[in-house]
Amino acid sequence: MTFVLWEVYELVAVATGFGGGYIQTEPMDLAIDLWVDSLGALAVCFLYDEFSHE
Image (cartoon, rainbow, N blue to C red; front, side, top):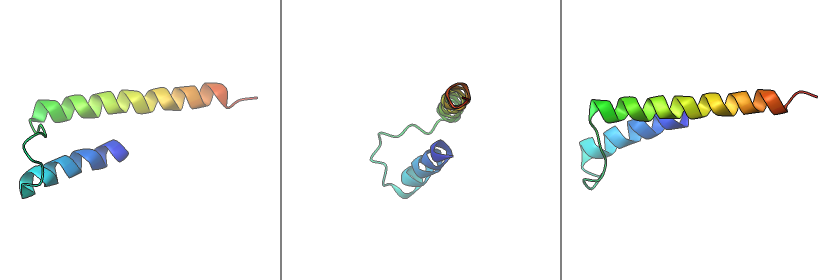
């Protein structure tokens, strides 16, 4: 969820001119960011599941 909020922040920052020109806003960048963030979230869920059973 945090990563989705970050992507929204990036878009708002660029739209308002606050971004300073360093934020990438191409659709492919958005897709890659969300894909990598989803893989990270799944990895955390997997590790939690593996190490939380007694």
